[in-house]
Length: 247
Image (tube, one colour):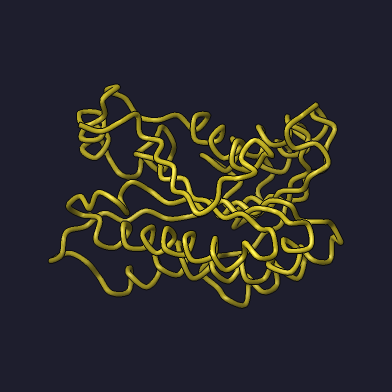
């Protein structure tokens, strides 16, 4: 039997990277997917349609911009209108930021916090009643940048540290209604996100990894699958690093 058979997962940032791989993997394990993306794209629509057909599940794309509180409200309304039981919420969407103190712009700080934390909090709050009915689970995407405090990560790392704290707090608040909350903290990984960070950041991460390489999207997605499945039924409030070990 598939690990997620009969369940429905909301995955934000579903169009690429970790999110796209989670859509593929969760669907292959029997989950219906509500795939949240910022903008409608024909290639993405076709890919979702093919994945749904191949796996025999439903995939419902929902489009909204995490920079806008009103757009998020509209997206949540559209999700609720589907009248589906929600068993899994993966707060995966995020934007990167790398700058040392003299070059940090406050406008960018606000934008990164909006997407990486405030939007995730709003979505989680909006889905609380549905998750509590199903006694579901929440998986927050954090980062080792939130834990290790490397130079240049004052903003991005702080947003992900906020997600870690949110994970620990919600694990305590929602346990009474049977909802588990955990986080994944990947190192820099082989995704478009890493390409945007540049070769210097990639090489630095590979040099400090005990395995001398970046994580793959598949390795991160399988960690999410484990946390979403009944195999992790007694795991709550945890932050799982996926970085291969650091020097």
